[in-house]
Length: 472
Image (cartoon, rainbow, N blue to C red; front, side, top):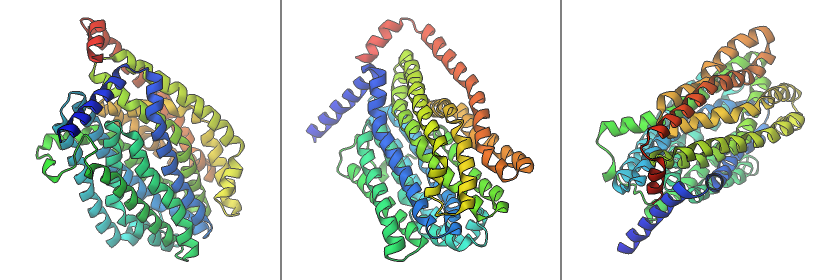
């Protein structure tokens, strides 16, 4: 037992040393690399679902857009408590308080399991009405119901896997968190065609594949905690009884709820806006949404590598490292998005064709929509990175405002205004227009935060001495 505690202590000290003294660029890439793989593969399985389901017809393809709102809800719950816990755990570990870190971890973990169980029970009971509410037409409804029933069963596993992923990242164990999510995602990619076609389960097979893969990811991640290899412990006895700690977790994680909540609402709104133009228009929007999510995985993964660096150094008052890390992440993210933007614009038709199963209407609408979004990819790193950094450092109000811009405050009005003048092309261009507005709205937040870092730096009595002591 003493040996294990000593090993854990050494691990914490090594983690702290890396965060506070290792070259920032190298540190971000080393932490962001595994997360980028996670994000890429976990979004790849959503794309693979669309690919295989598209072979069942246009209405089945469109059903993936309706059911995607459920995935977004799982993300909202998991990331709200996961990101909130991650930030609190990082602060606790940086001060050496393992007990407090375990309390935040356990509280978030068991809370989302409870929410997941309630979601599964209520969602399955009212599944038909829920699918209609999320934008399913009468032709899409049977496919959406068959698909979503099994997906809803996965709610407790999906939500808690997100939380465990965040906990492990807070401990600097991004590589292990990658293993759990990676195995589940790869299993989903393999199982989906087998269940849909070989076992002739149809679209229900895609739902079963999702359920099995989420359960496997849960087991792999939870097993790490069961074996006592983690710094934090997941115990029922460690669940907090202090309402203020729930509030702290929720407050810090609320930008994730805002972001994913608006993602759910925007997807449902997009289904309604595209609905008058037929199932092919809904299917086209579904294809583009999954492709764009996959392409953004690189920027999101790199940003996730920057977040613990920002949190540790903010707590240690090493503000110059935060500034350096922020601009390094912006630079790398922008370079990646330039390359992705050019390739996506050139090959937009070929990309959409892969998921359309020969439907000319899906190809036409989807190609135009994807090119509109590709044209503004370069603008996205700054508002993605800024919003996630604000959340990580505890600026919940600012992060929530930023999270609501792209798919809420700007996107929803665009969905109403542009189609009135441009028809289905207005639906297609709405997200790109919202992205442009979000970029310009984010710039004042960046300037304000950089001034805050300057002010904090100047207020330090002896920044050189403080930095040196933090490294030790």
